[in-house]
Image (cartoon, rainbow, N blue to C red; front, side, top):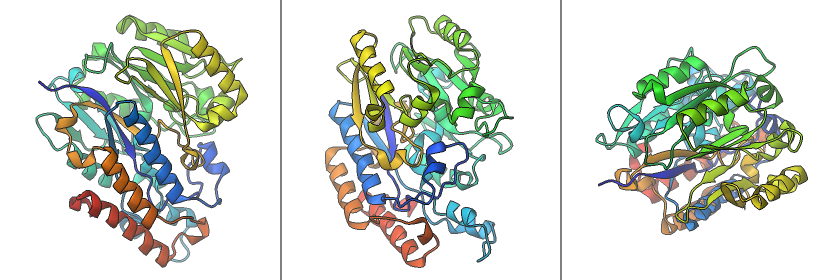
Length: 417
């Protein structure tokens, strides 16, 4: 009998990782536009984070960088020397590293046919991400090719923006039980775009064959979006029977909590009050863009970026939380500063899939020996630095392509070459 566990599939940071500042509403990305990036360091930081999860006894997978620069995208733009540099930069973006936006996932216990369903996100709101989905879909179809256990779906129609699991939470007594799936959407009209459309979420729920009694659609707080919480996972994260959330994450906080608890009894809400941690503190530190995990020890662990320790309000609150003996028992700190500077924390870097690891293509599952191989390829072939002024350079393009091909070669994943 298969054993269902949560597998975190982290995105390997691609060799074209750069700070072009393409993501409106992502304050870190726009703040650091034009800065020099460090792709090699970024990718090694990501592998180190994955190693940390494995050290806790957790199943760990990965997804690969997409082909960059994307010449099909440039052809679609009819790009020439006068084309807007931001559009050209979109062909080089390494944003697929944030696999929380790769797809929305419904585990087998929730679905009508008893399979794990994945719907690739269309990401249409941001031009630089809108062309990711065909290559992401091909990768998901390969990693989750076992048709007895998985169903992989094409994106929802592009008139409805869908940003994947970054706006999706799941509550259950444990990962292998039927759960309550919560889809969080934003309403348009503010200074920044609301990236997740309510209708997109409803389409995904129908595609996945979810029981309407075990689905909830919740509006994200407009105040949070205005403050820079471009996805729900910037202000809230869930794991099994725990919701860890900022007080201002949802348009109707108490109503949201009450409904979740009514439909998934026993759920505990750990709410961070705004008078202790402001929205600005939460967003700049990415306190909630953390991995909330249950290792085999059973002691729930929050994996936060170094920036949380750098912010005294956030760090003091975390110490008080640990002292209160609540459901979150440990806080682990990881260095993902290169990703953070582009607006993605530990939670952005992973897609959660509840499945039996034996049903996943083993080439996408990580162990220490494979992590050694990843680190070796990254050290040998990833550029040390990229200045945004280099985007479009033919020599850099060749370097980026070679790096990805060497990664595919060492992993034996020829299908994605």
